[in-house]
Length: 223
Image (tube, rainbow, N blue to C red; front, side, top):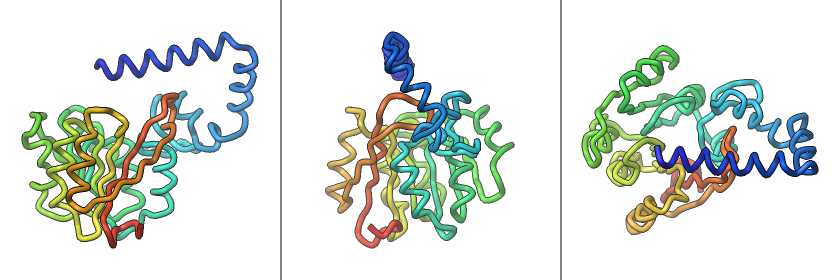
């Protein structure tokens, strides 16, 4: 809740500045009629409070540079595991072979089940830091080409998922600009991973963020 409060405070401060400067406001209004914010679906996402493209189709709540990267490189032979589901589940489901998602909130999981297609598997596991939630990819009993870390207990989730990756598997770690996640980089790099940071805005949000990609040689994205 504190993180959400800080994010809302930052956005409120930015909006106050926007509306106090007529020149900035004119540029903002122009951007709602054409340009990057319109082309990416940022305007629609901000209005709906949910990440979508310009046509209202689901997007993951990752940075736009990462979304563009995924748009170009996802394929229907890939297997995805997510820590934390939502519009990202629907986005991946239409582009890869299958998606497995773990959620700690039964009500949210029930809502997702009514929306996801048949190639999605939803797992509900109570949240205990360092517990079964963070080991959900391991207990799924299979290998994954992509593990998306975007839920709770992210450090433990990322580290416990390394052995669940396929030979070409990668880890996508959202909000990696946060100080509490930085220990992951050193641990993964010791295990042979390299890192690329995808900095930018997210759908509907003002603050910049970093969605990090950790990959090894001969990876699924051919890096």
